[in-house]
Length: 295
Image (cartoon, rainbow, N blue to C red):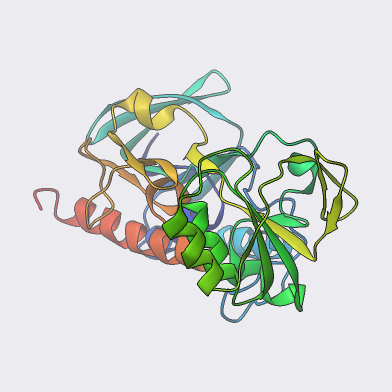
């Protein structure tokens, strides 16, 4: 059986795209590895109508709603390979090959976290990247920002809206006088001593032995698509301030005709709300490409 669309990735953007296509009575196969980027978070914030809801509940309800449409096939597994051209794509999963006219990459991203002991275990729990998603719950407590590069200066400046902020360059770059003045104008304190490890909930233990306690820590990890599928099928990847991203046009089609991409792997900035909107748009545009193949 050849599906109209194979969607690789069944999280927020992938399911939002699928909903548009299913409501157009198109045959959709979703292949999902079950590794939501926010799987460590206990609550999702900033998504209108669902503020504070457990992400597992959000995705569980969405998946249940999609299964009400008879043209959906859901496959739990990792897509191993993708090949083909417009109207004739093949995706291998679990040793079986599936075919479709269009391919949508909703594969999400992987985060390259700072190599500080204790960061990975607290990612999504007390160490975050998005102030709009997690800043309010810190209740104007002290906030620490762990730099990953010069762009982290802007993250620290913004986070001063949510609480007293301390910025740790942490040896990633030399803070020049102009940048230091910008941080000072926003009331941000600069701590030049490096962090040795993260303890407790969000305590930064410095190399000189001092311990600084925070309501929460933020960092801006470098991102890249979570699987090599995009490069494998020939999609162009572009460098952004946040890392590598799949290049798409206004319709969310990539540089490979018939291959579309949406969500965190294909746009910045990242949030649940933006991923859902991006996916809904991608789904509608894929449907249009099936209705008017020459457009």
